[in-house]
Length: 459
Image 1 (cartoon, rainbow, N blue to C red):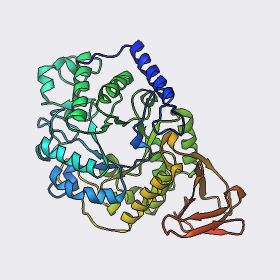
Image 2 (image 1 turned 90 degrees about the vertical axis):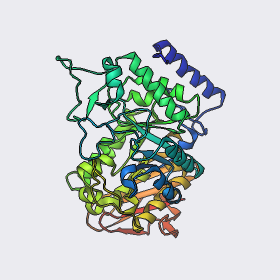
Image 3 (image 1 turned 120 degrees about the vertical axis):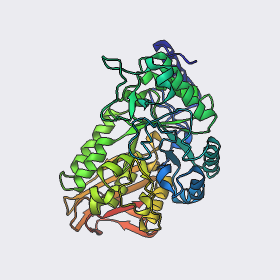
Image 4 (image 1 turned 45 degrees about the horizontal axis):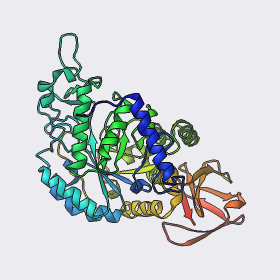
């Protein structure tokens, strides 16, 4: 059993991490980075792209075994971390739809029999590892299914109303709320998390709705899990800054995502994006990772496809999320032009096909890998905007690290624009990653972009 760490022990651990970092000569150029608050990122996370995978919808079979045939394709796409939506058994009581929500967990240490066995899952994890990629799984600490054995064996681990009845959070009537003030629940969750890392081989977790969990718990969880290997922790939250100071590598940039939708729909100027990025820099730890996305399972199923929300602006915002500071996320099917809302509680397979977007996202993934200026956290480069002459609709910025530079200019309007780059410090010869051709920038070069067009060059 793992007891909660005292404040003094948390401080000692964080201080110890800092001493170890200093002894290893850790600085902004080191392979193993540590933030001022003590979160050490896995070295392999320095240039990662995440890929969210829905087992039920990914193949017609909807099994772990069927996914194995896609691993080489995902490797060629250039993604690094496969995030599996919950792989656990789904509750039967108050189940939504025919198959239920993945987030109604009936057993925190089991796998959904519809997907296969635990051995099938381990085989898939091994195949992904053999391809040089990593695996994180969804973890749901806020609630469980009504028929999770914990509800019978440990009813005191849950919230109840005045009549003694379990409570469902929000309108999630297929689940009941866990009470994170109970130390025994925290002990159980620590043990379960460690099981998935040590026995199943996963490399971390995307933690669903962690809002009610204590930040200190994740310091202890990381300490326990990293007895086996370095892990990656992603919080589906951006309100609690302390999560990036205590335990988590990364959190969501929900605000920026919603602003992107509003800019694409003509409701706001692209200037709100610049303001949001400046807010990020001021608010979050310098070495904290921010997840960037234009779609995910929630957005696709409940808010609409990329085409529905962004129209013709989808590619422009994809370029944007890859070239600003942060970790890009692809949702399964995004690289194949997925243009339907995947049903959440029913079987609704992705229609896989090769299309222009496959090459587009492969190029963006390669761009991120080959340019250290685009790497994550302190591994990556500076971010600064610059002005152009000729149009008020373009957003221009540069990322730089050592002798590497990436320039991005995006037309955040549906009208063609022409402009020149007036900052002479940016003049020179570059490479266009989409064509492989050399591009010269100087005072005599006038650039033209179509509506929602983009210009990216590197050197």
